[in-house]
Every structure is written in C-alpha cells, then in structure tokens.
Image (cartoon, rainbow, N blue to C red; front, side, top):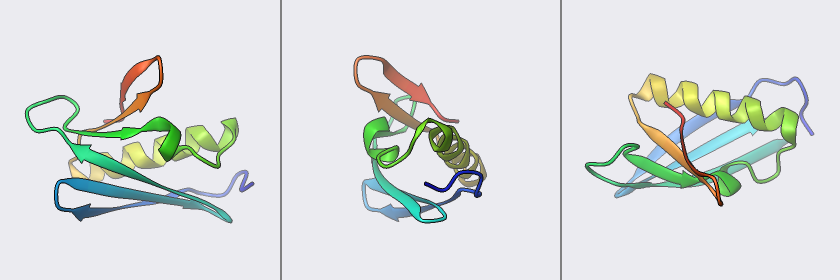
Amino acid sequence: MSRGQPVAASVERAGDHLVVRWRAGDAEGTCRFDHLPGTAPEWLGSAAELLEGTDRRLEGRVLDAVARLAADEGLELGIWHDDQGVELLV
C-alpha cells in the first residue's frame, strides 16, 4: 500500500455522471458520481466504490484529495455510506 505518498485525483465529465479517479503510488481507484439535479449534494457516489483497495490510513488521504478536487472544480460531491447515509465532501 502507498503509505505517505501524495494522492492525486482527477475528474472526467461523462454525460449525466462524473468519473473520479485517484492514485497514490501503486494504489488507485475509480468512482462514478451520478448527477442529482436540485439536490444537495448535486453529485452522489458510493463510498465503498471510491475507497475500494484502501486501508484506513490511505482512506483519509483519498477523501481529502477528492474533497480538494471538488472544491477546485466547484463541484458538490457526496458519498453514500451503507447504513450511515450521505457524507458531503465539499
């Protein structure tokens, strides 16, 4: 696992959804965020999908990188945690 390495995140717009990709050394992941117009958050993805392949230490850094990306891009992203509801990333 890529402990301590910076996490890079990028977003690609694809019609009615976004694809967010992150990478930290040899670890990487992808998550689809569906557009929910008129709601908060406006874009919603699965926490399990976004964080697949991470450990607790990397998980926080991935969330921070995706939140920075969302802020930089002016996106309101949220992730759905099973049995815990939605977490707003920015």
